[in-house]
Amino acid sequence: MTTGNSAASPEVANTLQVGDCTINYHDRGEGEAILLIHGSGPGVTAWANWRGVIPALSEKARVIAPDMLGFGYTSCPMERPLDPDAWVAQLVGLLDALDIETVSVVGNSFGGAIALAFALRHPQRVHRLVLMGSAGLSFPLTEGLDKVWGYQPSLAAMRELIQVFAFDHSIITDDLVRMRYEASIRDDVQTRFAQLFPAPRQQGIELLAVDETALRQLSQPTLIIHGRDDQVIPLEVSERLLRLIPHAQLHVFGECGHWVQIEQAAAFTRLLSDFLGNNENEVAA
Image (tube, rainbow, N blue to C red; front, top):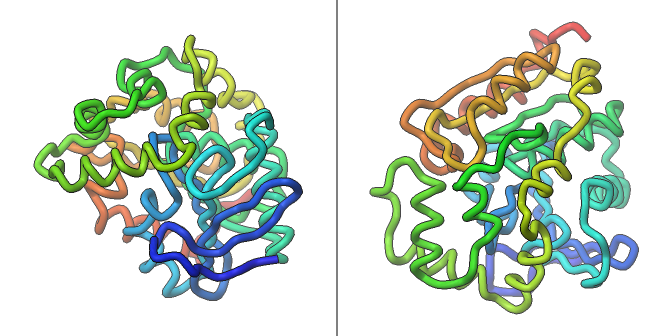
């Protein structure tokens, strides 16, 4: 069962019950489906992550963007273990409920790891794959990621965190810091967030890592995007993904941090639209 948004917040859209979880998701446009999977920053929602991308993509496609379990306005029992199995099952349940058989998947950071897990477990359901600043491989915990997952709410901590996310600090305003801080303390958000990737946080990286050998079997055309100056997920991770995934290409934005979709919004959206809309030059599987 789905319901529309009766709340004032643009972050709250449609509601769907999948098992014992209530999923908040955005569903815009018509045509071939594109699934957007957000990252794991404190206070993140699908809308906060993808608000600059959804309007353009939904002009030519159907865009589905859920709040993942443990994040945003999606709710599930606090005792439920959250791991790639649960997140992939959430996506399968959502797509099944919406009667969507195949999608192109765009994953950001944590969402990239879940996109890879989804594509490996359900390859017949994935048309194209986009990985932006993606996790999904093993790498040594960075100071930036440790700050993201170890965030304790305060305005000062949120400002420091946004400085980690963005290369261009001129985009950091008091209003942006306050907005993201207030999102991080809403209701039970921080309680859930603190449970997701506790110390030692290297375990969180390994939890999200997929089988590298299996990646060589991926047949989908794959676009990998990364900011050269990313302090959260090293560029080296995307370079390794490029070598492992057979039909992959890599685009690196210079003078850009972990927030590619914000710092390079126009160029990122064009790149995404061109790749997802290109059906004439399919890479042979």
